Image 1 (cartoon, rainbow, N blue to C red):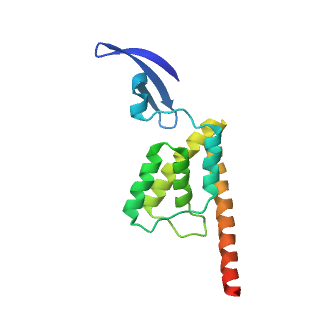
Image 2 (image 1 turned 135 degrees about the vertical axis):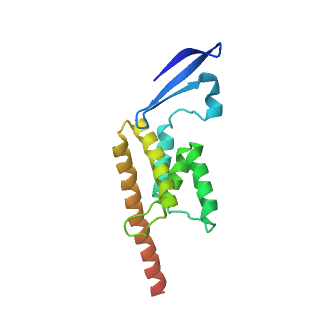
Image 3 (image 1 turned 90 degrees about the vertical axis):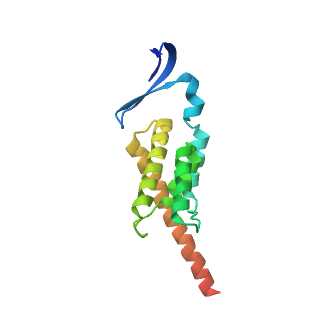
Length: 160
């Protein structure tokens, strides 16, 4: 929203003032602490495009224990890297035809989706609902395409 000066404990500090409407929260961050708190500029268009392309890829689920994968997903979400967040969204997405997610999987998916949608909305000047709809549309189309490709591969193996 703005940059303001405040006196805190006898020292003058220049602060970024950030308002999060959805969370009903105002955050003030000293301008000298940008790097250490992980603040960054919004992603550029090319990064957003690459993240949307990442969503179209085939989900990569490692065969490790869920607790280890959950830690990796959490680290990717908290990294702030839009492409890493897109990987989490892609890997944890479940279409209606797929089995239910566990509570923890759903929580991680929703956290990643929320982060990605907020950034997409800000970059493309959309509301969050439209950004979520755009991501869902890409994921649903990709799931249908990947399913059709897998079925075609199975049919090819059966014919051989």
